[in-house]
Image (tube, rainbow, N blue to C red; front, side, top):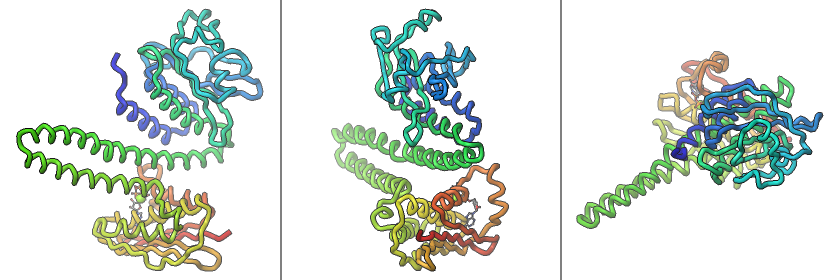
Length: 395
Ligand SMILES: Nc1ncnc2c1ncn2[C@@H]1O[C@H](COP(=O)(O)OP(=O)(O)OP(=O)(O)O)[C@@H](O)[C@H]1O
Ligand SMILES: [Mg+2]
């Protein structure tokens, strides 16, 4: 069987992340992750075990198995493994170290009695720990029998990435309902953004690099007969690479602008204004930017997320807008303000309609403001332009 291409695996991962962002039911999320593990790792079966501290056990919270790899899920009896017993899953749960084993029967940590009981033959196995973000062990994800022999080293990376998603989902279970719903919203916003960035990287830079390699090969061939034509090809290629470099810089800036860490909010606001000025026919200026007070990095990052989203919304509205950005100190706080004279919008009805829309911008602004303990106000009405104001208290 032909191995899955990396593009296909990336696609699966992105698809999964999108689904997770939309799914609030934890059982479904775990099942979805386990199914994705079966498919991406080309495994015959996969099991997601959860640590049950009170009983000192691992129990299978989601498992897939059977021939229709990735598509069929069989509800078989729950598996419970003692945390201090012999099994690869328990070993990984105890040590937190990933295990990739090509010949389990030669490994003392492998418990062959399960195979003996069920008649199943374990040939290769990959087990990764599932941890919370504060490094508590929540479970393990186990994949058994790769389609073509042993698991490969890239399978480890995918398994770790899936375990990270599983960790987020399991953390969610442990929180109280209200708190959990809130957390999930934050995760959604973050996942959505990662998804967007991954897509940009995949469609933009990765594509250009692949095309460039091809273009160089063609130019090399051409050069044998027609050097000037080959030179022209290369010149064109160079132009495309430079463009792509700019695209990559934009993505890096979107991930985290270095200037924010180096010089703070004011400098980052100025860099932003310069970067987006002229886009969509807009005119963006850093008007009153004179606050030089620094905050904790996560506070600055959250505040900048708000400023950037507000500025991007302002230049997106379709009418050539005048946009100004202010960052100044006033009465024990830094005020960050983005104002535009664009077409304005109905804030209340837009915020109410979120469930049915695909966008996340205003929601992300609100979450970011809340997380950093700042107050956000949105003033807008159709025809009146928009003002987004963020008050970040010093303390
Ligand atoms: N400055 C603004 N001027 C006019 N309309 C705005 C402005 N900011 C937001 N809106 C309106 O509010 C809607 C929701 O904004 P939001 O940022 O949540 O979504 P989006 O920008 O459309 O998509 P996303 O941010 O997810 O890429 C926008 O589609 C737009 O109609
Ligand atoms: Mg937006």
